[in-house]
Length: 409
Image (cartoon, rainbow, N blue to C red; front, side):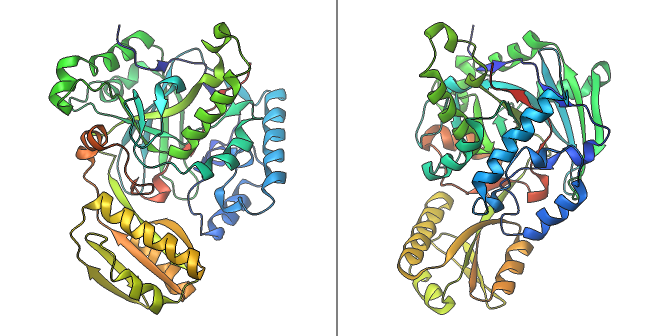
């Protein structure tokens, strides 16, 4: 039997009449747009919401300790008041419509963190697609280490060119129990969910993707590479770190099925029509634009565009996408270290230009798109891309916190 790292678990859903207030976008979105989060807070008000159970990264430097304590307190309160109901062990098929795509199909499932590694070069069954910055794990770990329930925004890709897993479930969705069907807040589109109880059937389909013949044909070697983390690299790395800490306190028998060993994610076929890759741009602010641009001229960032002072300039280099981004990130880091300023990672050209125009002392750097069909082959051969290379769609299309899962006994 081929190991898939998948587990059918008791997924939690909320008991609430207003799922539109409950589900909120991933915490690592709109990190330079305070107005988004203020408007969301006003919409949610006193209603039950995952906004009260997660920490938007825009608040990491704003009373984070106090906010984290409140988050864990809210989770315990929701648990004790019966806000959550647990499904039978199984999976949840998700169908998402966004302002940009008509349909994106996913499958909520638990994955084994023992089968996941986030190092730049890995042969693990489950791998990171982008570089992981260790310094970004501790603030997330502060939340997870004392939390009883996880709410994932992690999206994990699989390489099913024949579209025989989630697409088949979608075609037969009328035979599945519908769990939810509602509009997402803040322009996030619409989402439906269906309960999948055919645990062995689903897992067998993923096992088929690991046939030696197929792997050799795809990657030129029998590389047992099943899942690539598309969104939420740092959140999943945090779950892995937390599990490594927890298992130090357990017996060998206890480690085999401890809930913290697993993490709930949304699995999405990289060939799904609702999946498209968008480059993540660099927003460099608080800088002397003339000095910054002068130094940037000597950096080979590949084919990119630079936006400053209301003007866009094309820059052509010899580097390919990964090496070009590495070179630009290295320059940004060195400049900020020597001269001050800051950098943020922005989705969408219009959002980037708006931020640069509003700041004045800022520069926007725009990279090319990554062809999604090259992702698995590239990671198999070269390891993870530089961090913040690409995003699966626009910011508003990111996964919303909706389902949960117990991570304590």
